[in-house]
Image (cartoon, rainbow, N blue to C red; front, side, top):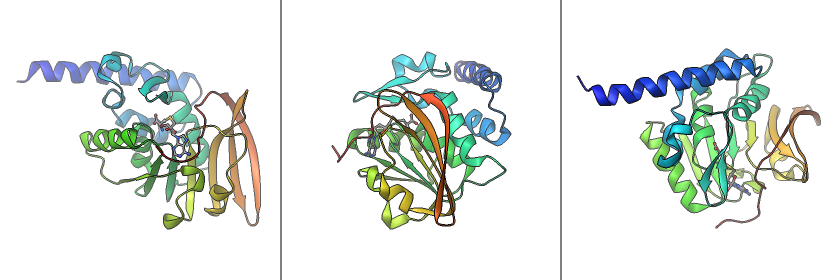
Length: 219
Ligand code: SAH
């Protein structure tokens, strides 16, 4: 009936399937995470001029000197939060950007809060999430270094920008048994998983990564 639209849909579906295959080759094996990524049309979240590259495994510019995260890194971070058959539960994302990762998280849990410090990016995230009919992500314009005290505690916290040290407010807002993942480091960064076990925090270093910096204040 509507050949043009279904044609575009097919292309996107095929390239999306290829992206999932690539993620498997790169070692992502959590089927729930792969299904969550497969369910989110990444081309909706990137600039129109870049839409043809939406399913390549690369970070792409978002505007405001920010980038939409690489699918592999999104998958790796969420997989680490879910490892051992754990559920994400109440989840906080710091650095919503265009909303892509929040959309993936929303496939896996009903409670997603996402904070972004750049107001026009937050507005974009809102539009993008609405475009894919993902209405359960709660977006907030704020400095994520302070977490989101009014919605804490969180079972999972995922930070999409790098810092030299873990912001104290974030670990304080972790629920018992909670997990947080973020890139740590300055010249070189490493994904770091922090688990709250009783009163102690267990840190595990994962992949070397490159994220934009976690900045102070809002704009
Ligand atoms: N999660 C996005 C990636 C965004 S890039 C995705 O799915 O593609 C990182 C984002 O973190 C940028 O939008 C940047 O503005 C934001 N950011 C940096 N420091 C922040 C802070 N202190 N609080 C909230 N957001 C922050």
